[in-house]
Length: 349
Ligand SMILES: [Zn+2]
Ligand SMILES: [Zn+2]
Image 1 (cartoon, rainbow, N blue to C red):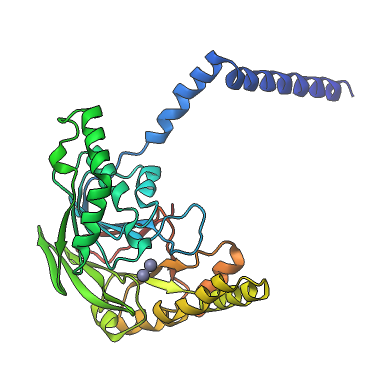
Image 2: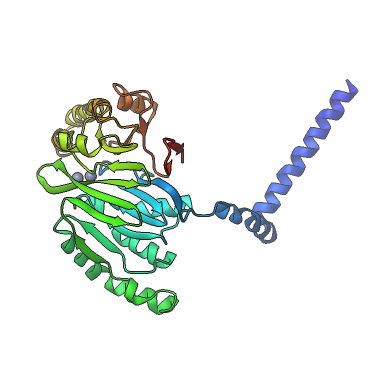
């Protein structure tokens, strides 16, 4: 009996001491500063990956225009050797890099699949973040004809910001010549051939948006295909032939139809019409297993999720009818494809 009382008293004393310690650390200036100095360094515990012997894919945005709190819109980054390429830059994409501690310094170009807002509105932030991060040349933005208009518009809108930043931080730290982006329209076929990397543009079917591209990356015996926004087509199938990794645009028809029904019942006719319109120009998730299998794709991952599942049930519905190893891409997810190997290492965010 006595030892029980003593134990209770000891626990009570320890609890009071712990509460007092917590209060001192969070409510006093000295306590806050002590704790801050020991926790802030944890943000920088991992060194950014600046090169990779093979292809390293970082999902910088897995969402579509449908509301998805905490998710950036369409963005896939591919590091090949020392060169980083980003396919599309939707809203929030550069913040995904910053949250994950990824570097944009090796960024060589942004490759646009098409000019829908959920693929381009993150471009100014990515330009700024890579300029501040130490990019050593102007940022090239490649894409179908029309990319000139997108880039000229952003340069025009951000011209004053470029000046403020250089004036504040100094022209040696932020060379003004690297601020304005350069547009480079490209045709179908090989668009980049550099240091062993070959990037090929292929035609996507995102009608009435035309032209719309997807891109295939081949480097040191490994391959990654990013579909862009498209329905399933034989062109995409051929482009993805024997690819190690296919990241494909994906819409869950059962979820979108349930949203349309619910919105109609709630009297919200305008968003209901949007739900009725979008299934015609995105690939339906249920079709993608057969596509990946017939193309001989090693790993299928769904991105540009329409919509991003908000709970366990929606994830289950999104992935039903698909092979068990299909991955739902998430912001911050990494796929590593080491050179001259068949390994695919997936790091969850
Ligand atoms: Zn889109
Ligand atoms: Zn689109």
